[in-house]
Length: 251
Image (cartoon, rainbow, N blue to C red; front, side, top):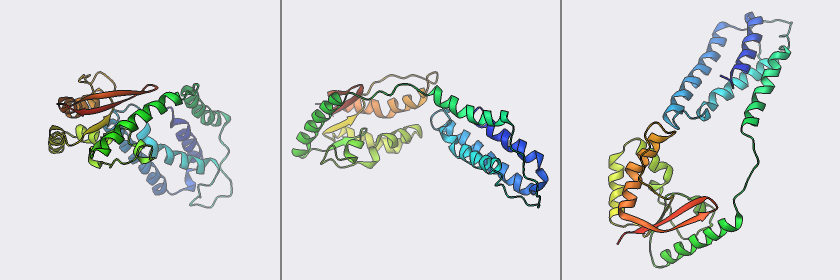
């Protein structure tokens, strides 16, 4: 409401004052488009991310801003010829349009801090040595997380395993895809991978009272439990707060 009401009020106040300029079907179509994007964004935001923020309402907000911009600068072409332009909005409306985005930015502000480069580099060097030692002996390494290290060639000689990427694993866990995790468990039980790089795993259920608690519980149920049953930590690297677990098969 805070993000969209100023622009919606601008559109409403300008259109109402000259509503005969546009055919009703055209106005209804624009309202319908915004309505579909708004409802769809709410559904997706609830399903993905637990409705924690508005990141899935971006299509609605962008279309609302686009329509508001056309109205504000008198570029909303009329269906009826009319010489008189739409009056410029009141200073109160313009103030709202300017103030709300600034308040959002100020609410997220703060000093920028960067990780300690030396500490991160040391962790990367140690991880690279362990991975290269394993691949040199013909072993397979699975990166569940931190795949950007492979993408940007900071670590070489490791093949991607697309089906066991962290986000995809999370999606399968949330959808309770038992057939998928049967195959995952077989690979872990047979020690298909000589090393697995992932965030440190723990068996701790949070419940729906916590933010993203149900998603976390799905991960623990399907992923953490199997990993810790068949693998153990060889080392946990600390890249200045970013923990990377390197797991090896249990004897």
